[in-house]
Length: 338
Image (cartoon, rainbow, N blue to C red; front, side, top):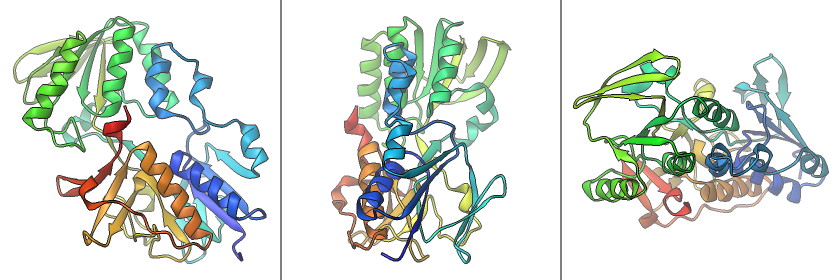
């Protein structure tokens, strides 16, 4: 293998499985992971357990720093990549450092999705994506008794269980955006609300939220089209969107995510994308699909690395496993993971 400098942008399951596969197939190459976050790879599905006090924060993390040292992988945390120069084969960091690469895998994952109607209130709505978010929930919950959840994705349902274990009063709002990427039809709405009510959650039926006002530090007022509610904490959960905005002017083909072929290759030589940030071409569908879920991310990360190392593995996804939501084709495993 002639390539000696591999760069991976991201530090989630796709990125780490890619790094492992690269090291297995290239013992002498230099492998560097850049992560904008200050913490090493973690298990996001355990964040609610940490909030509930069932595990310690250290239990969230996958691998020790010693593990990366043993694999000779250069893990650079808190290092934000702000752009990529594909003509010069460099990644540019926010502190102006320029790092050359021979092969690149973009595995930046997703960031919390917030519908436009709620973006005005994002400073007073909590999400849950990182250990830092979880710490904020722990801090907030120590001072309040009530929580209002707007959403319906896997994280919100898992968090609700944690909140009930903490004996918090939980109210829940689902709307047309709430269960993305699964379409929220009447059957799913009844099933989800029924399970929540059985656990003691109060369902707030409404069509839209008119106003959100912070009355005090730990008191919010939420006006819907049917009633006015008060809550100590407000959580917003509408799934994730690919974290690829920093690549918008680099020449990559980007739609919802980075467009790649069925081998996860971008338009640039030896540049791949994997995980939640990629849109993968499906020859049978003659269209692109996006990946959601831990299992999908790990599989795509490994395939991207193996292909970068010289293999020619095609992503195998059955057409019937891909659903369409709002014009976006999605292969999701999270529905069965919890």
